[in-house]
Length: 349
Image (tube, rainbow, N blue to C red; front, side, top):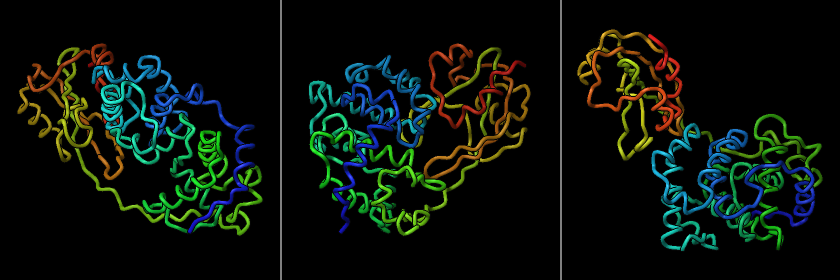
């Protein structure tokens, strides 16, 4: 059974008070603000999230405004953050909070877990940071710092390990400072007990308590099983232009990037002649096709390897939505997977 020493609490809180970063979501940590920040921070760096968070909160400052926002506008606000299912779940959860809870976030971890897109980590973060409840938020940072502190060699990739760590941390949460303790654990992992390279043990508040530091095993801990290799999918991406307009289409409502706008594409890597034939099949009357760059986009379980073709067209095929650059930039959110082709798409002839 894992045990986290209670004497680790005071030095960590003292260090956090003196060294915490100024982050926009730490000001006025309401359940809504904390929830939005934690969803944005999933799979995304802190510095990248800051401008998105400020823009999002300026336009959608409360759960009611999020519940009512147009889907395309929501995706435009989210554009560039990736993992767009997060944004769709935000709106679903907001509507549930408004419809079922009268616009007030449920005040327990169990009820928070009923919201779409809210898992153990997010529920713990909202409950502890915004509601001051003794509920851990165990992510990669927390798994790493606690593994090193205790010398644990449990595989942190296993779901049961997160539960073991959560149970151990819950026992030492300081009354009245639950939010600070959760954020201190996160902060230590993000700024001192680093995942890549040498941890900064000389400035760590747990230096005298840390088993991994004492044993010289910080390069071995935490233990994490290797991930399975991602599958690779090859695609040909079509940059169709007709005059000043370009072609876009909406993806299916289910599956990867569900409901998002995209550049037309097909499976496999086509030569120029076949790319032109495909454009003709869509009814776009292709005039010429030229290579328009390559791109690789990495998802959690797969990679897209893409070849682009820019094709000047004699007519606007009805299968697509045709927009000028200004119309596109004002209205549509394009997934990051396709954004590398925009330079070629909007070039003059």
